[in-house]
Length: 413
Image 1 (cartoon, helix red, strand yellow):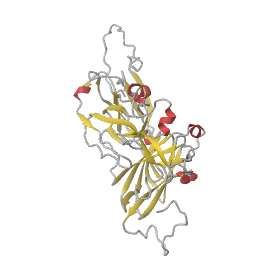
Image 2 (cartoon, helix red, strand yellow):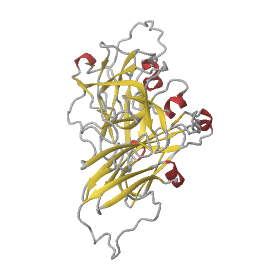
Image 3 (spheres, one colour):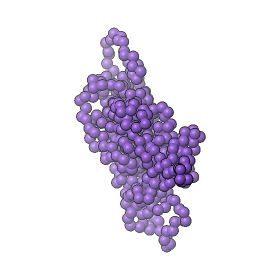
Image 4 (tube, helix red, strand yellow):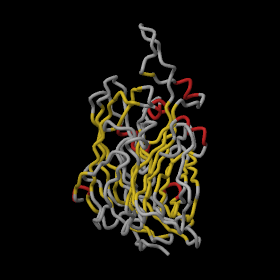
């Protein structure tokens, strides 16, 4: 059934359009699309006309017409002619940006907004492993970049300022954005330059963003990626006690050089040949081998519901994300939140440039270990801990013997 009433329109004279390389407004006709729903295979109807251009200005307009589908009745927003809303009239707010593993609070407003997201590119010398440091390319000084939270129907005003001391150009390809390059076409910034683009969020879900300046693999391999969560219209996912941000990626480096005193350097350099061969020296969660171990494990209490927003930046390897000793109560596969979640899942496959959202119920105290179950990657750094505190639960887990990790164990703290 159509969600947009059909009205006869007077014929309009043809007008020349600006020859813009980034313009996607090529077809003035309404395009009707149908997509399969979830479990009951109900149909979702969506309509779009004149999509919001990624190079628009304050006079551009949008309207929000919902198409409803799936068990959660989440809305998809696409642009049409009637009920226009000037972007300049949208309430403005600054996005709350958080550093991994932290997640911004749930957005509770019930209206769209212009959400300002400032990102700055720079480099830093980071402790990649216990042995070596590595120069990472960053958004806002961290790897992964900040977690961004918005709502479907919002317009993100993204500003990218390039402070790379080496003078490399950078940009943003956000998988949540609709339009050429996912925004990369209009956000490419040279040294000491700032580029701004506005992008309407049409679909809810968890999306990867990354730099897409040439050579793209090098920018991603050096740390330029992060996650954006677009909350569904209306109610978000069921509330939980803890939310965390975890992102897997690989690092490719050359052997350390030998210093004049005969010692190996503590700094290693990027290796393009190793990346081309897809042979990483490090596979890590949140940018280093110890980011979620030692003094920085995730924490929860017995009885807590824990949600993990998980992304895989790659650039080469698919992740087999698993938490030893637990089950995923809910899995929103591929970061999609419009369909019902899968239940009781042990391991989730997450491709490069992909994501997932998983919920866990913590029933027993102790240490739960996050791994990529391509298990040799454990020895390359793909491990993290979730420490759970609280009373024992002998009805679920008990032994007359105390726990005793094996010698050299990397799976339990």
